Length: 636
Image (cartoon, rainbow, N blue to C red; front, side, top):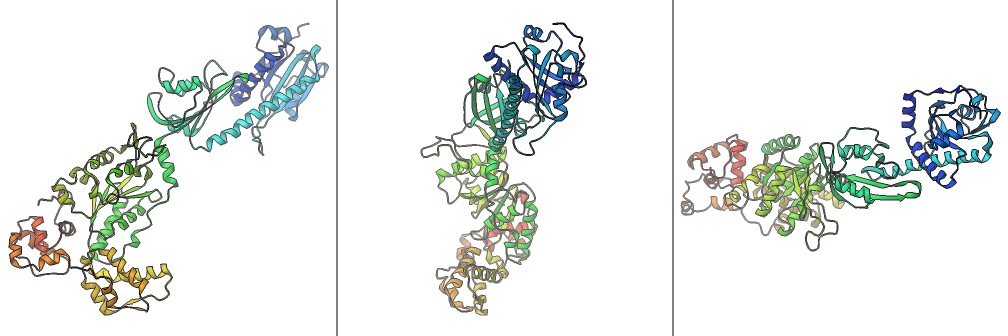
């Protein structure tokens, strides 16, 4: 064949690089298709090429130089621009966005008159409308005129169709990957000498803490350090292993990432496709996702704390300020004073309000189960453990608040483990070997005399100070008598509405006087239960004194009042000075200062002298500004 003078212009290298990057998936699938086709046809009568949007020949197969020279004699080469050399199937097809063929003389350029050109257009990336249209490109089959056949036109259209389907359905499958919410990495170990990344998402890059980048069809070693690092990862790739929630430490660059890995494997050697789909997540991510699905267990707000007592209002204002911090809070108060309501209010007043509020009563849980409830356990940690292990309350509260009620009931050995979690912000599940980072605000509460427990080595002082970065004292109801009637009226309205009772009962003056004379050992809870009984059981509009007495048969005077009324001999046995006259009201600043002076500044003796608990005297000292909260000591 007479070799004609070449008339093609050459595409610049930048355009070639950009188009090959844009069409990288089509390029890869075409390479696989060609390998499969030529292996079966064993034909050297034609070549298949990929054409860019500007008509540049991006690649041409077969790459067998002998066959290519025999077919085209150097007249057709990679990077040739087919637009601008007159009419031919490529230039016409790109212009009208249709598949075209041009045979022999139908080609305007002299150099092409000895060839047949079959071009199939491609410009859709999606199987759904509007099909993600992009600049058109296509597949071209080139053959010497002597081998021209309409079969080649059908073949070019078929190849283009198959390539689009492969890319489109890969795009669709990616949507299924993304539904997992995990970091996704798809690798292929057969398409090149190195294992290549065929897909990775933003979540994967976030987990691995690497900058966003287009890593498609780049070597996996550019992302995950190659051997000898990451032996478990590369073993999975080499053997196409399937694993589920496998803990793995990946070395990425100069840092390490703890993650959980699940994989699917695919093997299609006939089309040179073998690899692994990795789904990566972290324990923290799992905890956060579960936390998001959990309802906020806190339903109370500061508006639900009823009372006009001055000290109570000051305490609420202080609690509101504490809610804006991430510091741990200790709530001290007698049983029934509303520690759980205050804890919920603090959570709902914080920036964590949309995250979980998880409560655990340390006194209501069997001691041998508290650890697994708090910290969770791994599979097989003990007899009866769930097959896949279980999250603890700290993990469930991720990003939110955990409320540890009756913290004084926690066993000493568990206190040491809790202290480590509070200090390190990390925990280890029962039977586990990996540390899990937790982000929770801790609110603890107790009705015990925590100072006495510390003194008797029943509660760790270091844990107490860690949990009580900030402290709140809930005063007993008998010290805020002015709130008793408003609380009763609030409970009457709320209970009546709940049970659908039309008539709202009222307290008689005699009933009010009786309620005010009682000491309410069970505090607000006892008062609420009393009103619940009366509203449910009694008809009419009035609450009479006998209704109250009938439901408080076991009422007794509190020990503090009994002590105040004890004879002098009993007080002498306590070696205390003569106390002031019996008093039912709250301790005043003057009385408190006098008691401390009489008792030589010994707070424990001053509390007994005044007939109040040590908890109350510490709260009063704080309220009147007579004690530095951070320097409080149970012995002074």
